[in-house]
Amino acid sequence: EADIYQTPRYLVIGTGKKITLECSQTMGHDKMYWYQQDPGMELHLIHYSYGVNSTEKGDLSSESTVSRIRTEHFPLTLESARPSHTSQYLCASAGHDRESGKNIQYFGAGTRLSVL
Amino acid sequence: QKEVEQDPGPLSVPEGAIVSLNCTYSNSAFQYFMWYRQYSRKGPELLMYTYSSGNKEDGRFTAQVDKSSKYISLFIRDSQPSDSATYLCAGSKAAGNKLTFGGGTRVLVKP
Image (cartoon, rainbow over all chains, first blue to last red; front, top):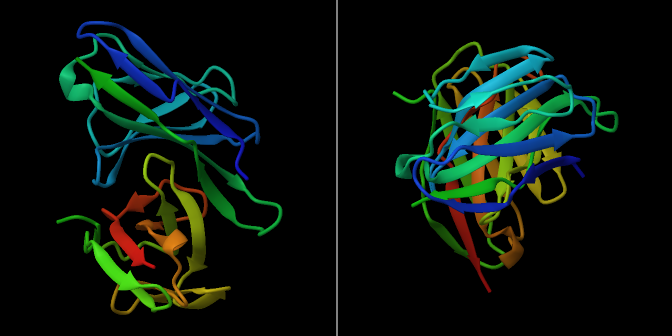
């Protein structure tokens, strides 16, 4: 079972508020990712990091920002939330799985964000 | 054009039937292919992981990759109601690199 945690699980917030979605993993993985997923739709990569102090924008443009000050922590911030930001945000980390010998991407349970 | 395409479904089958899921992809650089299962309001979990072309079997699940036709398949034998979920295929250029996902196929197994 993957040790990757996202908080909060659900967040309802008003327009204009600053929010930070937390993501932590205890597997020591260097690679971490943020995806955005609308209900019944595909996952879109919005940010990724290959290590501390390394962040890149993903395939889908996003107004959010990320930081990677510690290996285990990859928070996502929205400076001013808008209704168009309403979505599910999924965090993932990737690393070598000892049992299978493969590089596997593990997902957190997600944060469901609603901006009113 | 999306790099990875999946029929969104829903695909409805009776319990015990074989579920057949397919993806096509356009990026020839993809070497690693994965199937993830996602239950409602949960994060995706890895089901199958294959490298290059070929078959892989794990219990009731079989994954097939045909790189010549850029076609990925997942078969679920003896399907159970607990298999009802959305199944996402994904490809990547290198092990551990970022994944490109298909849109997912929703599967419903009826008792």
